[in-house]
Image (tube, rainbow, N blue to C red; front, side):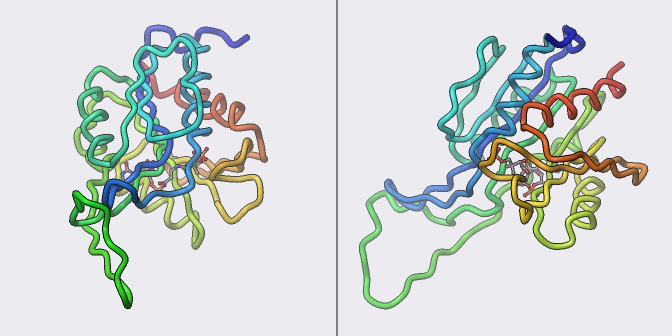
Length: 219
Ligand code: PMT
């Protein structure tokens, strides 16, 4: 087993997708399974941390021994849960795939089939991680970036814009990386521009590698 090197630390982790409802039966979402975030929550718990897991809908059982488990559906619910728990955390790791947009209008009844096409108007969701970057005091902030085009450039932009300590980039065009799989292939990018390339590993081992890299930031 791992040493309890995160004992006494409170770590907030987000996982899974968000669901943005259109009507009582339909929503907009993405392919996040929650595996990456749950692996982080599990490994952090095994390493002695007090873990707050805030999760969109998944098919995974929450790890045993969590300090708090907060299930949410929408980005707005995730935002509230994250902000409510931010001050007590020393580390925040955002593995969730948050929908950037939500339908402008929620239809109380099921939307009827109609002839011709149909247009759904979307409005922007808040960028939760960017808000945390503005509020951050002593916290270590870690983000993920799921990219298809110019992955490193986009990840560096997010690292800076969101005021993160480091960002975990998964190139989701690679087999065995990103959404749904049990493995991930990541690069870790730091504020000083350093890039660390990790091989394909089980998400459990990627989680431990990320937690290892959080340790030096803790005081
Ligand atoms: O769940 P799995 O199936 O195991 O898949 C894992 C994963 C691919 C979902 C995960 O490894 C991952 O990359 N998560 C982040 C996916 C994502 O939404 O990336 P992004 O580039 O859109 O967002 C960048 C960062 O900002 C993320 O840390 C995200 O949580 C955060 N964000 C994004 C949008 C938003 N409105 N609020 C946010 O906080």
